[in-house]
Image (cartoon, rainbow, N blue to C red; front, side):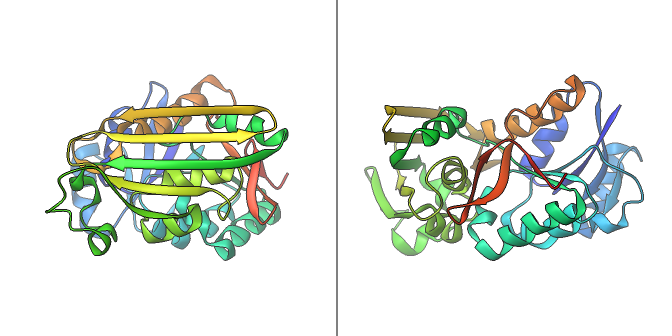
Length: 285
């Protein structure tokens, strides 16, 4: 039986926990103390509720972050310093260059491993391959319903209550998007990490009152040619900011533990053009 440590106990974490494949169990859940009683009831003692990974006396086969960019910033280094494998869904945290460097150094010094999951987007293998031949431009557009943007910085840029047609309200770099919209723009960071980097990847964010789905459009041009990807995903019923596919990418990472194969959604974190941009899963070994 493979044992994971879950970071977070919100909508996405619960979705992943409900879908864990046979042969994988959550032995530890790191969450705020107010959730500990709920965890104890839900798991009947099978999972230990923690407030920090350092409280764990065991050895998880994988630490799975399904919480927030803040969680990656606060806990990521401590996890990697224990030599553990950390898979992150909140990839926007790596828009902070100083944090990225600390995590890389922790991997190198303590034989940890940092895995960036594909999340709510597809085609990252093709994007990384295209980079090998020379990328010229990568543009990503996210289109979501007003409900998906509520509670975010979007409310300061556009009146979500008055919107009657699809409107782009933000254009900028992936780094800017990830910092300004930490709960909505992790896909932008994931694309940047596989492609041109945080500053060269162009991002447009759109609100569409006529949709209930999260639409991701990716346009890539380079010496290889060009390709376009459009993915229309259903958001989680419990959290419209989160795509169901993002949760499923975390489930797939857990399934890879059982099969004994490489976590196919993984991505190596190394320094290249001042971003983390190499395929695979980085370790200091």
